[in-house]
Image 1 (cartoon, rainbow, N blue to C red):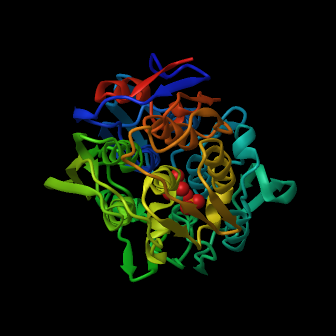
Image 2 (cartoon, rainbow, N blue to C red):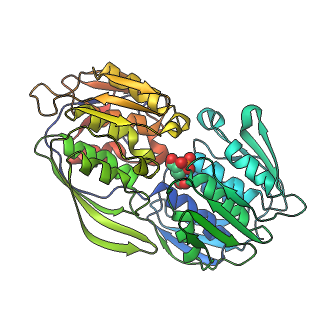
Image 3 (cartoon, rainbow, N blue to C red):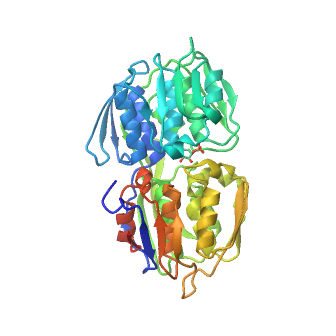
Length: 446
Ligand code: S3P
């Protein structure tokens, strides 16, 4: 956690136009995968722009506990001594993944293939999240897996006599499930084939190929054969589009704003937020498009624009799943109604994000109708002199993205917004407060 982010409570007031150029921290999904694949590779890998957040540091700690040498400068440069697929050693005690669903679900895939048993634990939020989605297919592959009541963490995993490949249609659109099974598939006899119901982030497939591991993607079907080797390689982690999204929305909403976000990952399985905001009328321009290893990156310029409500296209839902809290803030300030359906997964994230956002938006005077799998949000007057939203006290439910979404809402409110329980911002976005202040957002501790 960096200075300024430690506060449990943040207060935001309506401020001036946003201006400036910033670089958001490294991508969380890619940072987790960089640790895991480099640890399983043969040889030493250098990782740059690694996200120094609590979630990804928990993954580092877990792999160190399994005997992997990981040296870091604390500022995003890591050297990872890969131990090969069979080189991990039994940890002393449980592996604690903190708040991180990605850490736990992906590590479960690796743990299922080890000759030793492991126990995976997490904080109160993670301990309430569903694990049946990985427990059942891992068992079908031959792993021995125990979970707490309701298939929740903690998990205990041991390899069965042998792991075998699986041909599995994933019931929920989840890159964590896909990645868990592909990682377990590295240890399985024969071929593992997973079919996703909708397009999910493909960082695991891209990075496996960077490490020289053959992966075939045929539409929604991803296939790999077990038992081959990963070869060390350098990984440059792009800026996290999920973190950038907060400032994309803020600059769009605050009149007169004009900002540039440098070096942001724009992988087409992650850029749904840009498509949704553009469809609402946002002015977003990409430049300097290039590849960072296997991942597309770009600089993103955002200028203030007036938004209108839309029906969010179904094919973009999985692609923008982490950005909905801040998209809901955009919707609250757009003209007309924004409708989201097919997003039941939002209810099992770090909090129930449909309920948490509806509660907070109601406090700020926004009318919303909640559905089991979505929400309708009635927009307000984005450019009115008094501010589009009311002030108030918001419960973030300990969810980093709910907390940050309401910081952005505070920049549009006619009275200060106070957000409680913000410590977990450090799980994904260390330095958020300082970066927001640097762009002109009037946020402070207490
Ligand atoms: C992630 C996948 C998504 C996302 C999470 C990161 C990943 O979760 O919400 O923040 O890195 O694979 P699901 O797989 O549960 O959709």
